[in-house]
Image 1 (cartoon, rainbow over the protein chains, first blue to last red):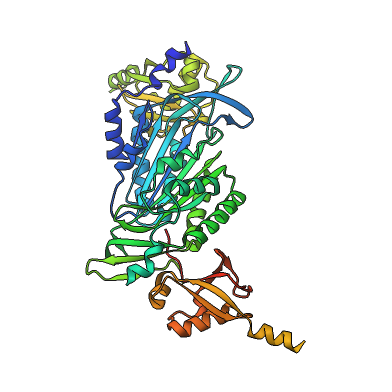
Image 2: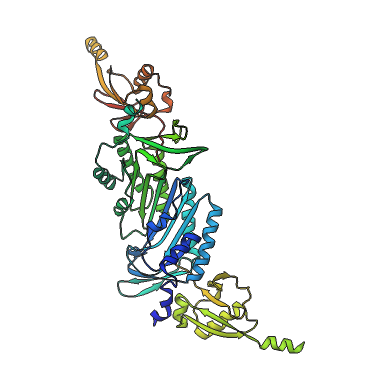
Amino acid sequence: MTDNVHGQSMNIKRSIDEAYSIAERDGFALLDTDIDENRLKKTLDDDSCGAFVCFEGRVRNHNNASNVNRLTYYGYEDLAINQGRAIIKEAKQRFEITHAIAIHRIGALEIGDVAIWVGVVSSHRYPAFDACRWILDTIKADIPVWKQEYYQDDSSKWLSNNG
Amino acid sequence: MTDNVHGQSMNIKRSIDEAYSIAERDGFALLDTDIDENRLKKTLDDDSCGAFVCFEGRVRNHNNASNVNRLTYYGYEDLAINQGRAIIKEAKQRFEITHAIAIHRIGALEIGDVAIWVGVVSSHRYPAFDACRWILDTIKADIPVWKQEYYQDDSSKWLSNNG
Amino acid sequence: MSTVVENHTDATMNITVLYFASLADEANCHDEKVEVKQTTSLTELYEQLSQKHRFSRPQSELRVAVNDYFAKWTDEIHDGDSVVFITPVAGG
Amino acid sequence: MSTVVENHTDATMNITVLYFASLADEANCHDEKVEVKQTTSLTELYEQLSQKHRFSRPQSELRVAVNDYFAKWTDEIHDGDSVVFITPVAGG
């Protein structure tokens, strides 16, 4: 029953190539498979940039005091893409950066899997650090992605970043 | 003449494998060839860590108003390794991080080449960002590496980060 | 004149509602089509659906999206719009 | 007693000095061995070598390393030590 009502939110409607194209053009997309970091990095190559900062968010084996076995991310893809485009656009206005790209993965993830990847390039180092952190924080606050953690006793819980 | 007096500072005395072993054990080493980012990242894998932040410093095609064709880094390897060990140790005391590793490359570099790589893993995201930035700043301030920039008219200049 | 007003009041619009996360659990569906009065506000729409599905979260804890963009609760909706109530997100 | 003092004053120590960056250009070598009086301080050593090689940077702009660790200018040096004067660095 649970699988039925959430099934459509565990997969993207687009193809993987389409998701990467959208990420390259707009700076953000959802993906429902392994994030290919090298593919994303290549889109950021720029001889004028001395600084590259990236963040990888990985599924860790604990949250607060509980042992986590796995977790599942669910996404509202169309809103996520629209909101992601706005976030990357705003990042480029706020910080002296050349380009930025981010991908959030949805679906069932194991411990160690990368759930989110954010990369930024700029001429100088501080704007890349600041923008990467701001993009990550803003994605966590605004992108419509939800997660359910599964524990060793098979119980699960909806989590929220705020509210 | 110039090549003779600087020749020994353009290469490491250790083997590449030895440099990676030192980096893995102490957190820092010099290298005189392409930095293998994936090799460094692997040393940071830890199921308890939800956050990975890395910085890559690349040779860019300009500095201030001048066009840069290439540049050469020179290092005092033994001091660099001792000081790098102290920097990583201090970073682990200052920030809530699990592990950190950094490599600085020396020798002749082309535009786009990675001169420095810093990676940090931690349970939560902010300490990883803060530590990565602090390690980078401290390496730039304290590690005995010097660079000479070569311009389009074949002139060159010793640079300094401070002083 | 009075006829026109009558028509307006009786007229309805068809809205598609998508559910995610705990709202999907409580509604027990991923999406549904609802027919509501022409002038129904987003607040009224949530109130109606909340009564139908017994949603546990008050509107004050939610955001709302219309046609795949975040919207304000005071924004008007129109026939054919797609509406999503957004519980606190948990990406990253 | 006076003999001992005489011996101390006349005694020398051998120091290896390495040069990097602009100091290597000015000294026109990567390293040299120097024999100095037993009680020579790091400041005096830089002064002597600065006169010999006509270094353009004053000591105040430099740091100093002894045996591959940063040292204080007031640290003592001993026979067999390796000393490096560090011009402003430029890594990263």
